[in-house]
Length: 357
Image (cartoon, rainbow, N blue to C red):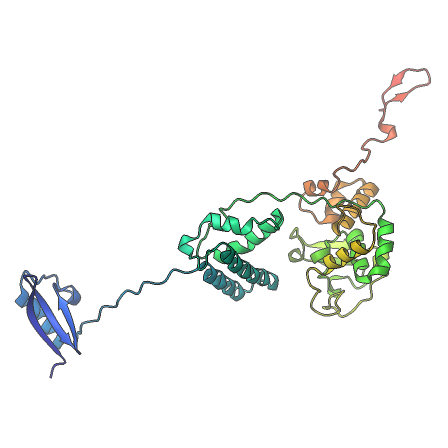
């Protein structure tokens, strides 16, 4: 016994083939479903016979799937998925932490702007700009947040975030110290770890918040006279070998190779550790001038190297800069005589002028 029933009927004055299968009705105006180029209007009897043949061979009508219209993806959902993708890609813990923070900030932004459940199809550059440009965010912070937000939405809106133009941040002037010894003498009894950080920033010209903070004992040579930094550990991306002055070595007590020199554990201290210590020191001691930061120790060290060597090339290598132009910015406003006395015109005893050879 067949599990189907087939007949020819008329619909709107046109013949159609109707097949009943498992309680469902299937209607056909042509033979496209069984691969035959024939319309029911042309020859309904032949078309019905063709369908019957296919049915006996085992062919069965397929139920038409109703197209389910997917709900638009919200920006928050897209950001959350973006975070999951970056976790799967093995991005750094720091990036993931910043990315998760952006999701929280975006939720707050939507609530403040009455944009609850804003969908990707309605997301505009103006939304991005209003999210980034805030009274309490510096131009540098805006760009940092933008650089984290962009890859989170890249899969959904590839160029949207990048299309938003922001003001360039004003360069921070890390004013050098005129009284470096006085500053260091004040820091030493205040906090030993901050003292070592500042001494290495000045004496090794390393950057405090990452290069110094993340140092392990395996980065040092066996006799502690050199520090080896791989390219992925410093801003320039180049491998560096940095001499360690005696006054820094005298403070070092070597620990386990892969332990951090400050925490004494494999993990470094948190990224704001020295920033916090420096802020506390400034509040407690009235020896730091406006514009002087932890990086001022690095600037002061750079100026000292140039004064002693007169070589911008040596300064570039010591700083780990990719370009001499970057090194020159550390010498802005520095009054260093480029001419020596012997370079100047001479006056003979006879009163005649004679140029130096």
